Image 1 (cartoon, rainbow, N blue to C red):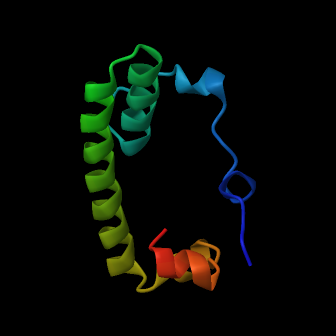
Image 2 (cartoon, one colour):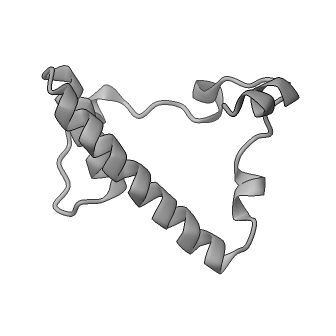
Amino acid sequence: MTYSVDKVFPPYSEESMGKVASRNTICETLRQIYSDINEGKLEDAKYKIRVAVTMAKRMSTKLNSYNRGYAKSFFPKKNEEENKNGC
């Protein structure tokens, strides 16, 4: 069974991508990446993607400490072929 990411997780609106938060949250970092890409600042975007991955991994670790295995019910299962490819 395959799934389309945008059907499971609809994309954030383009209008909302222009908002600016006062704190450096993962959502703010993603909005900055979006802006950097639109402005052609690809090296800045690459760096911020690495920061966002670190933020997401820390968030996942913290959520897992509250509720072990929380992600199993949150994310849809991928088919066997996708799992073999490491996607």
